[in-house]
Length: 80
Image: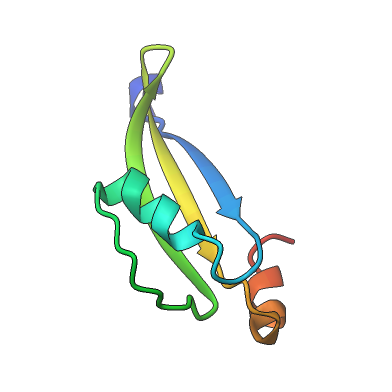
């Protein structure tokens, strides 16, 4: 595999309490949209965005975790 074919990727897991704006922040950054309507995340959601760091294309993967305690077992599996 040639060096220019190797993809650089960064995975960021966003954690926090429920209803604090994790999903809204990620959607705003990745899709450019913002909604005030609250829809809780069940388990984990995933969005990504291509960015450039030091003149290199990087795939930024943002993992949006559920903040409610009822989903703790599911959520923790994604950031062990």
